[in-house]
Image 1 (cartoon, rainbow, N blue to C red):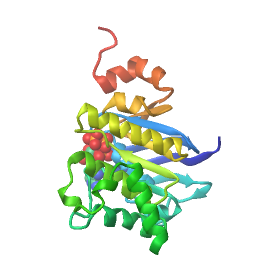
Image 2: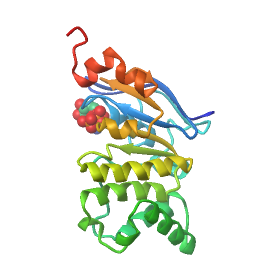
Image 3: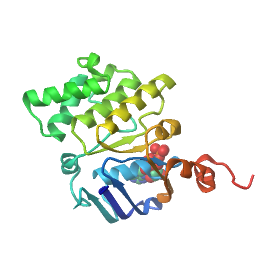
Length: 242
Ligand SMILES: Nc1ncnc2c1ncn2[C@@H]1O[C@H](COP(=O)(O)OP(=O)(O)OP(=O)(O)O)[C@@H](O)[C@H]1O
């Protein structure tokens, strides 16, 4: 499979805080990759760099073979990169339908009936159709998380970035969400998923990347990575010598 996203030598610091330390990795078309790392490791900053909310100090980001390192965030969205936010950020005064319509019109460039039909299909896929006319500000946490995903999917992304979408959910809600993400992935969308709820991540992803202090410290098949003493020590706080 060819790389949809290719990151090479990416560097970013905020003063003394290094959030990307010469980071390089590829994500293949159709792949689902999980990102693990302790709090403050630089995971969300990586998404901000990929989406263009942050500019890198050095390094390149290529998407579908095109260098997008200096491309605006709006343009990257139109090229097919969409994200969910760790803390849901719906347009609270707008309905669920209207929120997703923003993704369809601004991201996918759809209009009129075509945009509306696409939004309805996305709301059905994400389990939000019965709540289409509810004000987004009145949704439960699960539904706000679903709406984050729906708005991103409405933009018809080639690459979907999910930022801790399973956090704070009950077990049953988490299972429902995993199901939705699996369906999105099975539909061909490439996914990069940052998640602390490891069992949810492992139910979906084919590869894991572990980040610590902005540095990629491990990358590989989920089982190999989760069994690695270095990862256990850094991520799970387990001393390999004990
Ligand atoms: N715009 C910014 N200005 C200054 N420091 C920032 C900025 N954005 C992030 N940081 C700092 O960079 C570090 C990495 O933050 P980031 O949110 O990327 O980590 P994370 O791995 O996503 O953490 P978590 O798992 O807690 O969400 C943190 O110390 C954070 O305070």
